[in-house]
Amino acid sequence: MSRFAKIFASRREAGRPAIIPYITAGDPTLAASRDICLALAEAGADIIELGVPFSDPVADGPVIQAASQRALAQETRLTDVLELARAVRRDSDVGLLLFSYYNPILRYGLEAFAREAAAAGCDAVLVTDLIPEEAATYRAAVQAAGLETVFLAAPTSPDARLASIAAASSGFIYAVARLGVTGAASEVDSGPRELIGRLRRHTQLPLAVGFGLARADQVRAVGAYADGAVVGSALVAAIAAAAPGHEAPAAASFLRSLQA
Image (cartoon, rainbow, N blue to C red; front, top):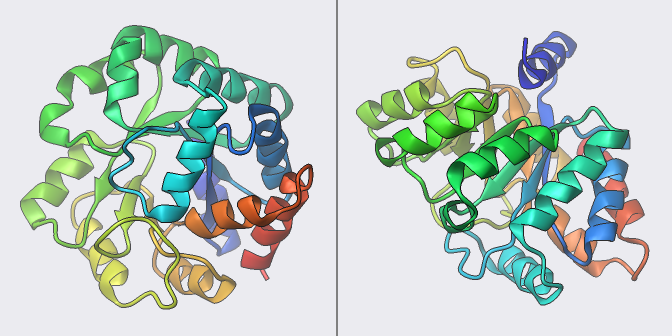
């Protein structure tokens, strides 16, 4: 059984969703990112999404775009993110999901990326701008290295597309809670519940909801029908607001607030 499968099974038995925080690697520094990851794991994170900073993050809102720019200003590259994963894995058994756009992976080389990501202790990869119909070569390389493939499913996806997303995915499926880019939302409407219901007709994989979650009541609401809750922009904003050197405690405090 994979690490992700064990995590989701354990949380299902406990009657709560897996908590999946996202951070932009290298924001504010790589050393701080390592401390943030370990603090998040200690605070109850089940799977950490390690975002690879990218110069044109079209799926992301202003908070994560700014985080990517800060990380790129520190000259954070995919190689550095893999080393960050390796450093976290040395000290923690937390799940690790690499979150990237496709261009950095292609530039790195598919086979080399997959091999080195697995060696660094990553469990899975999510490529934001890659659709299942164009992912055959990528899936073959990643799965050959023993990594799982996570794909996004949107509320606007027709059933035929949800079926193809389910067929291409392993580990879990990331259900997008709302249309648009990433960013905290004041409310989470019925859209993700309906999407989860539609996805369950096509797969037995765990289903996690993200895009817009920022508060404990939202996480609880999502946990009533989904297997995981992804929190990104609100956490990245909390890290950015922390005093220098205090990013890890701020991240841990924020994550604990989601589980209140």
